[in-house]
Length: 250
Image (cartoon, rainbow, N blue to C red; front, side, top):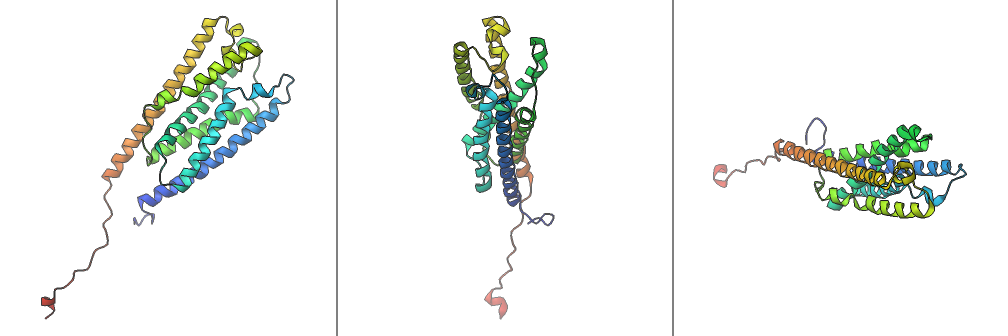
């Protein structure tokens, strides 16, 4: 064992994974606190509708993050590495919460030009800014450890499954009830159907770009970690004392 730390590289990685598992569990708790706090906050509005609350992409992606981080925490605490499918799921969940934060930031910044103000209570701050930032930290830490399989490029395709399904549901429901969770999906606010189509295409393009970036970063960090470990000298095994032959003992 190295004298500096008293732990072998494998032991240090196991300890780092356990700490990462605890961090993920803390993030799950924080996300649940934010969801409960936000639900209680929006109940104070006369226009509140439970179906509308759970129709927000942010809320649905937060639940996806809670499930994904819980599964990832169990694997980090109990297993030496994650299965390949979990890397895909973790990356997708990270993209969803990060992009939710980015879109919310744009909506808050652009709300004044559309004649309304968006308040940002503490629960929204957690949901849209704090949790996404910490989720990105957890994802990056896992990539730096590089003990799991590389995130495959097929993740770029898988990441669109949920957003496209959500988009279809939202547009159909919005046309039926006259309510949209985001102004750029509402033809009346955007000005035309073409404007809605362009907005959706831009958002889906951002999904692809962000996912591609994360996959590239993961694979880059994975290769660097592999090369670094290959250059590390192996610890010499215990030396065996020479055994004298019977002839030399005469």
